[in-house]
Amino acid sequence: MMTMKKRVAILGSTGSIGCQALEIIERYPNLFEAEVLTANNNTSLLIEQAIKFNVNAVVIADESKYSIVSNALDKYDIKVFCGIESIESLVCSDNIDIVLTAMVGFSGVKPTLAAIKAGKRVALANKETLVAAGSIVMNALKNSSSHIIPVDSEHSAIFQCLQGEYNLPEKILLTASGGPFLNWDKDKIREASIEEALNHPKWSMGKKVTIDSASMMNKGLEMIEAKWLFDVTPSQIEMVVHPQSIIHSMVQFKDGSITAQLSNPDMRLPIQYSFTYPNRLDSHIKKIDFKTLMELNFSKPDTDKFPCIRIAYEAIEMGGNIPCAMNAANECAVELFLDNSITFGEISKIIEQTIKTIDFVKEPSLEEILLTDKEARKIAYQIITKK
Ligand code: MN3
Image (cartoon, rainbow, N blue to C red; front, side):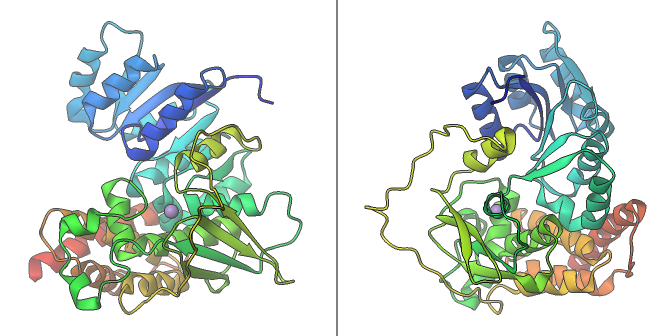
């Protein structure tokens, strides 16, 4: 068992994943310690968490909010920093063992790369990093003692299915709950309201990933995430709609055997596993009772109703900087939808048009990825204003 306390940096501590990670640290104070917390702009919760967990340092990414946090933590022995660069340098410090990347979106790329270069365990909850910069991240891993433990429930499931396995997977069966619009018709989905899109039937998550789940772009992002994490081709990844979210994904081998990971849907399980791996600890989540489990259903995703799935397969097929552009356009489109500036149906249209417009780069460097992200956002906003 683990003897030394593992010191954790939680990037995005005020979000849904970050808060649940702190619950785990609170439950196992002899095993884990919150060392660094970072937040984008939620100052009040960051301050509260910093004091409660008596952390070493916090970072508020929004520099205009630095004084609010530093004043509030003035009488405590807690260092306060601001800006993205501070996150990058803090994750590299010697007193960090695990870096949980639970921030939203493309902002995860640089801190994740910094943590990899510093040889940390990366508990990866930020899928956008692999979507935008997959080849760069995987190359950085090859030259480092760092390792990634996936936190996304599907990827944690696949990772768990592959433990102790000597054979390569023939196919990955990536499960999808189908989101709130699974049984809606196409025209109704296009006009869906913000409230309807945020009403996820199975998972309680942050706004960005909840909207991605409604459009099923989340599954597209996860397909690309799986491609990089498990070194498979997109054609080896099959999406399976499974509304109960009990099976969190499966792996098929060439003899036809399929292994699966099951549990009640609760993100605290994959978060905890990413901390304790290769060990398992009591998780206090409700365990499955097969005597009362009613039924498990499966179906094929409808790419006509959910064009984002098709767009994601096309983007990874094109490769280069296109998945990065797709991700950037999606982040913009989700923001605009949540801002009431576009309809739900326009999300996929903006993404598709952005991909068509962006200059193609076959083997992008990190600089070219950063540039593509900027450029794609510009294009996406131009599409809206021209409308
Ligand atoms: Mn997921």
